[in-house]
Image 1 (tube, helix red, strand yellow):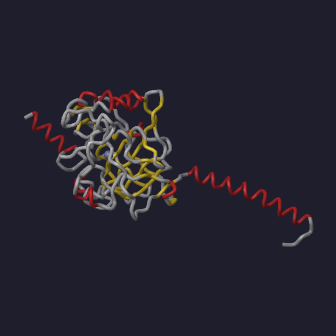
Image 2 (cartoon, rainbow, N blue to C red):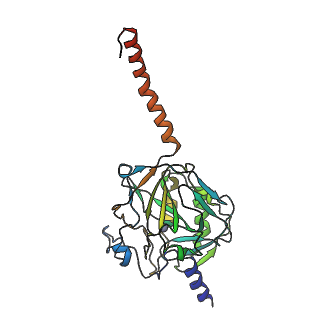
Image 3 (cartoon, rainbow, N blue to C red):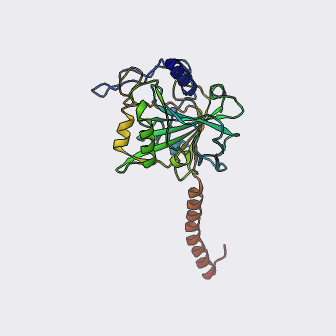
Length: 306
Ligand SMILES: [Zn+2]
């Protein structure tokens, strides 16, 4: 009975949306990867896959309305942590928490969040220590499984973490609530503390990258509107190491669980600089215009006509 309950929960809460018959390439003791990410299907043949390198030089500038975070500051309802063999995932009963704005077409309901170590997206070729994915589905579809079959049916917020000397207190709380499932794939536990998504968002929510891509695990459905915030959050090396002690479904430590960079192909990568960019632009215009005005005044004083 207990086993059936675990299987049911795993099926209900998993994001990969397929049977877990796949794995990340393992790193051998000499640093070489054991094999390629040969996941087949659209993972191999798709032209709009994720993650990608978020290169500012390859991006076009964009401007969208601000995000609206509904109930991000309210404790998550019955949060449940599962080790799905590929990550640590925290799920809730979909409904109360959602996002809109930020150039999204409508309202997207929060389903779950999970971590990748190291980061899946890179910024200008640089990889971060950790990446958190907050997964939402378009409310016009009943479930995330259904939404994952539609273009832009899923909206994921990506939050990057960099290493510092001090531990991150929110990450600490998440690790403490999750450690019971670390050593056994397929197990789940109740998240006992209050979990507020607002506590784990960067302060700057106006500067981000936007592109249309896919789930980064099989079946790699090309259904995702991606937002990856530019501002990263801190965590300590010790905290990062604890993520690496999560066991996969073959009982080994999951040393990394990021998919390799996929080609952008013909897609647009949009960089939304937010308010900072507008201010900088204003300053630089002013700096250029002052010397120009001085030259014009001198010309006028010297009696030349333009
Ligand atoms: Zn993910």
